[in-house]
Structure formats: C-alpha cells, structure tokens
Length: 200
Picture 1: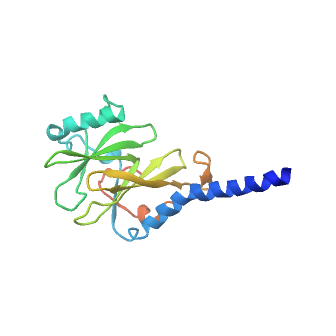
Picture 2: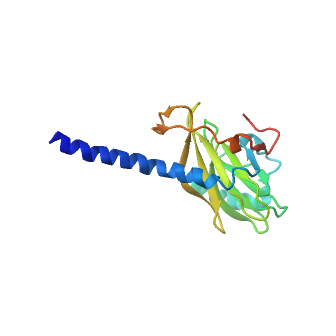
Picture 3: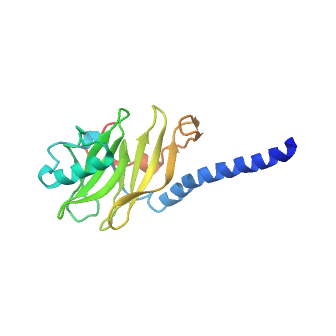
C-alpha cells in the first residue's frame, strides 16, 4: 500500500516543482531579446519634491492612493521624471506607498493629457531604453538582507501590467520564497544609474 502511495506523491511533487519554476523560465526567456540593450535604474533616492508636477497630477495621484489603500501616504509629494517612450516628454514615477525594506509601489503618470499608466513595485526600478516605444520595466523587490525577487512589467497600450511570476534572487536556497535562488542578471547589474543620488 505504501509503495502505491509513494509513486503518485513523487510524481505530484515533481510536477509542482516544474510548474512553480515555469514562470522563472519564462521570465528568463523573455529577457533574451533585451539583456544586451541599455538599461537605466533608479530608486526612492532619485525622487524629489521639486520634480513633482503637483498642479497637473495631484488629482490622479489621490485616486491612485485610494486604490492602493494609502490615502494619507507622506511620500506621494515627490516624483522621478523619466522619458519612457522617447518622445522627449517625461513620465513621472510617484512613490504611492513605501515599506521599511526600501520597496515602493510606484504610480506611473504622464502629462498632456494627464493620465495614470499603472503601478510598478520594487526597491530598484530598471527601465529598458527603447526609442519610440514604451519600454519593458523590471522591478527588484527586497524581501530580506540577502533575498529578493524580480518582476517584469509590460505596456499594453494603456497601462503597465505585471507579466509572469517572480524571479527569485539570492544565494543558495531562499527561505522566504522557498525556492533555489539565482544571481542578479548581469544586464541589470550593469544598468546605468538614472540619477546621481541612487542608493546602493
């Protein structure tokens, strides 16, 4: 009886490992076409109150804050401007909510007309520079001192949305994510700092 139970359990275990790792494989495969291209990176230190166009964005930011469940967030008075699609007009990353580990939920906004372009979440935001097209964004979210996860965002004509699962980053077997870790991809390690105040 035990032998009959062991085989199905073994098969189920292998299946779950393969399925859980499939999003990691998909994530990695999706990077092949972009890993040699130039990337910029930034974090909370890059955002400033002087760069925040409050008069044009305050209403949309308040709506986004309510959607995120943080209507009184003290960080949403600043922004990091970055031209995403190469039209020589900046889009604005506004920290809607930030945690103790340095992670932020960044609202992405545009002007002319003012519009909300989605939320990307992480401590470090990596932007793939593509002229004339909305770029891919990869966000690194920190889970502990040594462990984190990468998540990819793509633009779907109106907003950025997350695609695939997380890509676990860290040494050895990761306790929080309960999976083997990976090294940070080299193309992200070599990303250019988008501001001089970028933390490390």
